Length: 118
Length: 396
Image (tube, rainbow over the protein chains, first blue to last red):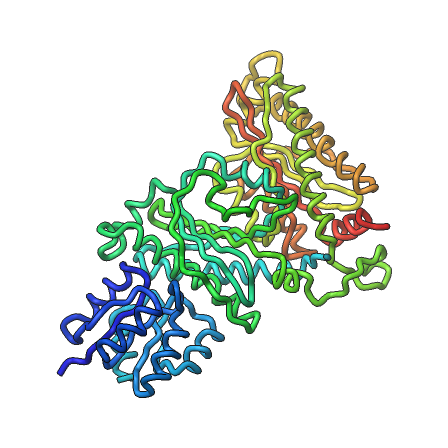
């Protein structure tokens, strides 16, 4: 059975790009545009993996990750972000993220990160 | 508040590194090589900054910054190049706004990483905001308020296309203040190293702002002098005090042929001043000054005319500084230069580089009406001496 993935990114362009990379090998269960939607869609779909942007409106990706993992300790989240700040990476890992990819990325980076996390 | 020019240099290096990271991210995203051409910090009045953006139509993305650094960062490019950008992005043409916004998000994220890592603190970015703007509206609301606006600006040029980007960062005064105050001794001593003391490079922020105004007045005087000597109507288009790596200055002047005059300044501050015209402008201005048409463009007669013009302009420029700073500044006789732009100014930069890595560059564009002529004035003062003079300016 294909790994079920939730994409959370406020950029439609980036969601499309990720979808193109993942489709075929993974099942995309939904696309969230902000942290609140990501939490709600996680609860709704229970995906195997969340590809989570950090800078998003309403609730950012680190807060959303914290919230998802509080309720679902087995959830797997990979940060997929333009932010490469060490402090943000630490905050993401502290929040429970399993991986961290900085944009712009190539397909192999994404697949490697997923392979390591799932 | 005292601004330490060494700390400002460190900030500039961070901005340059950030710009390189942003250029790398943009290159990866678009498949087009981008190089950082210039990174510098400007101090200018809001009004002058607004003038320097006049006539530009831009598309861009802005983000708000909080945490390790407060303020705003902007990525902008010429609106005419949007199709060129979108054509380089997979699926870009079908989702213009989203694609551009993400380009800005990625570039600015890269730009800020170095700052955050240096500070050891996270910088929170607000979600990116897409905009289309005329002139200075490219800068965030309220950015132009006040007498002295600090602006970091980096230009990212594509090596094979016209797709060029600018990154602007306007730090708010809070955490940025801590950064630019630096760790060096705040008091500027009059004796400096020559007297065995510690030469300080800290200058009162207000004095920097005053010096920026002085530069503007000097530009206006220089423009008046051109008008008097040539009979041509002149206007000062741009006047900004920028803090840039000296090594970048020749590249800014560019590779087009230029002619003009260069001077060594003696006094406090000492340094160099270059008055450069594009080659055709130099010939047109010389022509306007001479009673008869010269035998050859930029021949002996034209050179003499431009040297005299340079003399008068330089005096107009530095007299105002000397009067306000309470110092005496004299200048050497004019040296005529005629070469590609970078080569005209490289010798001055090389001499000043023996003493310092960064310089305050006062760039002024003077435009004449009636004939197409443009003149750029580059003033390169010794940073320590300028700091001392500015420090006295804010004295009791």
